[in-house]
Length: 212
Image (tube, rainbow, N blue to C red; front, side):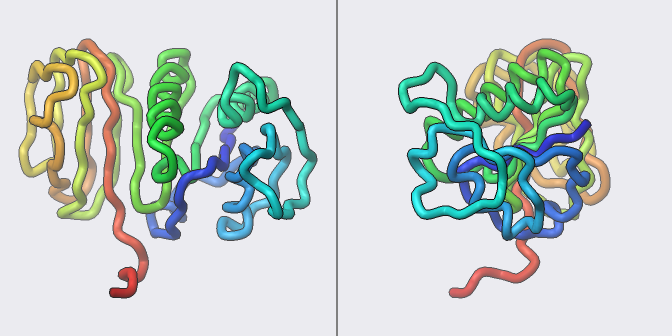
């Protein structure tokens, strides 16, 4: 089951966003509910402490939690998605906004991937894909698409194919800039890893260029 989880970052309508698999379940985490109209989806449940969605109207069942809690609103939505049987989580509105929330979402996505779920982080113009040993990442990207492999630990045996600068069995230290700002050749980009934790990110062009 595929669950879309709407969170509070930016959302840009792009072909990459429209190509995402259709959801079986849509959950909104607090201010992420504002993305429902742009996406044209019905929200099955709206969860959180509702401290950042003042004035937002959404026709969806609400699950209200106190502000003094041990989980973020996104984590509450993840828990509900898993209770309802989701095995694939797509976080929409994942980039932009507060850095601490973005970082927590990325690291939490890696943890969920380690637990066996398929995870995608997406804001339309940017996406993130957890890369773990034995769980390769395959992305179909237009030529010239910028992509990076962010080393969130020391990496061993990183192989990257379908890019301007391919890698074969590379060792990459934690936080290295070596694997930042590569380019897709066009077609399938494949990343595999023998040991470590990484996030593959890609920048996606909007349908129309933004105004000057």
